[in-house]
Length: 224
Image 1 (cartoon, helix red, strand yellow):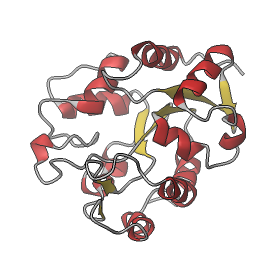
Image 2 (cartoon, helix red, strand yellow):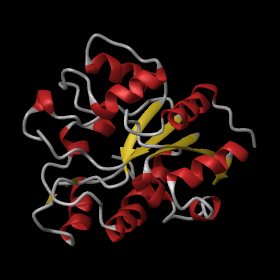
Image 3 (cartoon, one colour):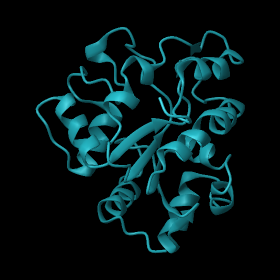
């Protein structure tokens, strides 16, 4: 694995400081499903999506586990269904959809890569988001070197706001709502790349803002 690509033990080390009933250090889903071996685009990443954290329900029931890179999930639901729908990706199986996602130059990572039980507490600790961003996400972005970054939801926004030069570009974007309003006025750029902001893709969130973000992705319309 190339330097900067996340290592499961490094993720566990970050999460151990937050050990408790709501954190599960095993499995580390990106390692279980070989996300960086099987699903990483071979010709470079056009868009790196940054989501929140792996789901905590049904982790030991493959067909029901909603982790994005779980090809056994059936039916396709949760964030996978929403992202594929927004990108116009269709397939008979989750595996086919993931192959199309990869082959179009897309890759998704999580701001926090260990499993947290959000039934126990709905919010991820701010310090865990910041530490994960500094120690895991920053070198990951440098290694993957995407053309564009798409933030999916508040946790991903908070993570990127923990890192320079993204913190400066997102200084006026403390919330997803502020970030969406900002990008409607001015495209967001940092470190030579476009940063697109979307609410977390869900039927409960701002559908217009989600559509706008994915329309930007489809056009890759982010002028210098």
